[in-house]
Length: 393
Ligand SMILES: *[C@@H]1O[C@H](CO)[C@@H](O)[C@H](O)[C@H]1NC(C)=O
Ligand SMILES: *[C@@H]1O[C@H](CO)[C@@H](O)[C@H](O)[C@H]1NC(C)=O
Image (tube, rainbow, N blue to C red; front, side, top):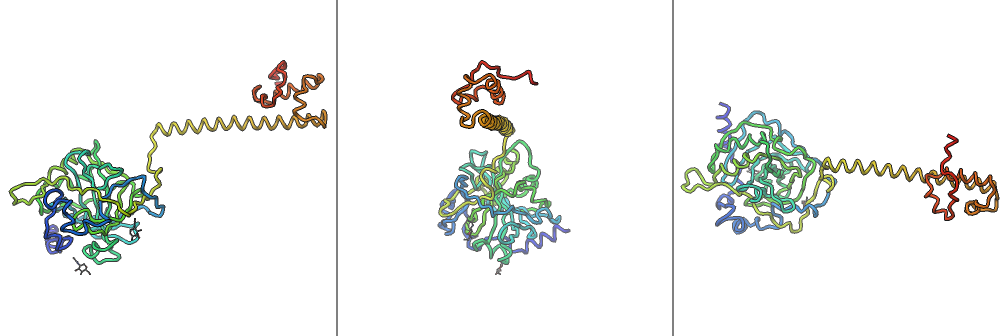
């Protein structure tokens, strides 16, 4: 009964059509109205602040003023079902507007999320953004509009700073990611374009990486026509993992064609090529070094290095202390024996000194860490004397 009510409400809603004009031309990723032709029909696609981009990490700028992003209400889905639909370009999930984003100059409310993927593994691409030229296998986009300045997404999407999109790079690993099954398990129900289905609501935050503090930030556009240059982009540094089987389902279940069309077209490679950065800067919320995780080998090397450094420092300090004590002793001796003789003279003359002086020289040697330390005094003490005075101990 609840579902029927929600269905009626959804049917009455105006829907998320970007603009009336955009619906007049059906665009694709390849073919007659492929991405290189988009700008002929949608002028903004030829603009100078387009998305996606390749993030060249050595050319990013650290902005210490970029705070962690805080999703608000992502986990409170309210047990109302979500709507999942195939729009012929991707699988879209509409999001409730109480889900929002804190950590940007304005409050942004959630609109929808969708995915981009390739057609068979990393060498074929799949993500829209790339980092240092490297693609991920897929990419999740969570779209928000500036609900502080604009009444709805249609009004916001044409304005600079009207939208905020979170970009999450997806790579494959061994393990199944249960959060993504909340979407992938239902793709078989929307195989054809324009099909839609209710799916159980779930905690959207579980789709995001754990680390929401480290991200790339730049000003860009929608990555599909009409390519409005209205998006504050946040691309997270941490990637999320799904299994190869999950990726394969994403890549092979959907069609871009409608159910009644004779020619079935697989919905694959629905990612746009990276666009020139032009005058734009890409900022990071993190300093370059903090992005590296240390391996256990590196940690061991650092610990050993620090220990060696401490031991070395201790030896040097010991040497300095002994040297100071040695010179202090010499000064006392010089003063006692002959006020006009320098400490150097005491040493050079020690061979000719009386018996009492020789015994004192033995004590000088005892104060030093080892015999080598004497070489800088130019006139080493006669080595006939015992090095260590063991009898006193
Ligand atoms: C969005 O807001 C604008 C401006 O207030 C209004 O004209 C338009 O009808 C609204 N669109 C929708 C879909 O609610
Ligand atoms: C995006 O553009 C706005 C307005 O021009 C500017 O204030 C802001 O600094 C830009 N942000 C980035 C990340 O370049």
